Amino acid sequence: MAKPKKKDKEKQEEKKSYDDSKIKRGKKTFRRTETNMWTSMMSKDDDDIKGRMDEETRKRYTIIGVAAAIAGLLAIFALADLMITADMMDEPFFEMEAGNLALVNSKIRITVSEEPMLDEDTGEQLEDSKGNLRFDRTEIVIGWLQWLMLAYLAFTGPFSVVVLIRNRRINKMEDRLGEFLRDIAESARSGQTLHQSIRTAAGGSYGALTPEIEKMAKQISWGVNATVAMERFADRVNTPLVRRAATLIIEASNAGGEVAKVLDAAAIDTKEIQLLKKERSLEMSTYVLVIFVAFLVFLVVIFIVYGSFVPQMQAMAESFKQSDTSVSMSGLDPTNVDFGQIQLVYALAGLIQAIGDGLAGGLMSTGKITEGFKFTFFMVLIVFLGFTFVMPFLA
Image (cartoon, rainbow, N blue to C red; front, side):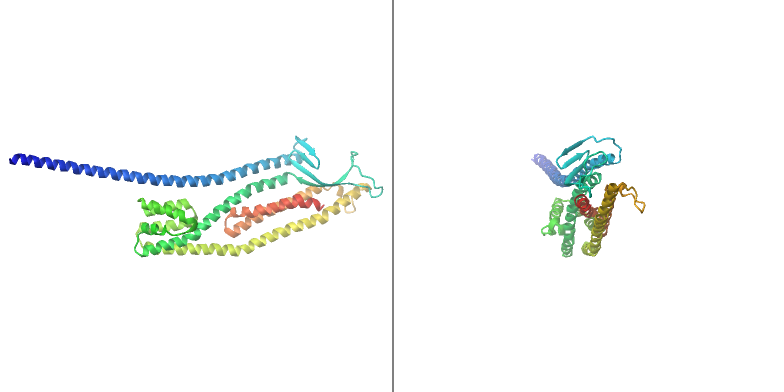
């Protein structure tokens, strides 16, 4: 009877060993399945983040691309009118007139007022050399320089809006970064690890930074290392200050030092940088205001000089034509003066001043030349309105 018992015992041990190995294989399969599930969920979350970021980037580039296309079209109008003005084309390829509006190629002429030019002695209407009646017209002309200004406005306007929205988003996030770092430093001092501190801080409110912190905490809960989650957080937010703080925390965590002290230092560093930015912006705002005032004074002086000088020159030219005098006592022939060229020179000076002052103001206020485009937009707009709609009435 002993032998059968021994065989039964061996069979039971084999069955138990088989069951144990089956359980181990099941556990490994479950763990592998669980890991794959969390990995797929994490990659799906990262894909969603990348998709959203790509969508935001795509929107920005779409806006800038459309603005660049419109600016290019307006620049073509400017080039066409410039070629006609420079006598590179013998005759206009498009000409139309309807009432007070006239289109010649890409030049637009709007007649605001029209009065016959009369002889001072006889009171009869004057004629030109071809026998056509002469009129004193006040016209609003949109020529190649105006088209060039409109092209500049069409590009810098949307571009400035995109930059402004992005900078506001960055500022809102960076303003709450110091508070977030202080909170996880407090949690670290209480004995929590870095990943526990981040998960605890995820329950707080940090404004525009809150959704990104919640994503970081969710990734940590799935088993992602805290330093990897912090690195992904810096990639998503992608601001200089966040990257600086994240790099400091990651290096301290990898080195194995006291993370709480590093977090406190990063929070203080972030706060000081924010204060320096605000202090610089406040101090430079006075100089930016001086630039704006100097620009407006420059335009006013141009308008005063043009309004007092050009009408007298035009009156002198008319008197010379009526008296058949070709040269004045000073040797100047006012009949050969091109008053349109004088206006063009003044407009070019105003445009150059607007672009230069605007870029300098942006560079002084924030240290970024892209910030100057919003200033140049308003300055060039003032130049366009002034020289297109105001200056014709001064002559």
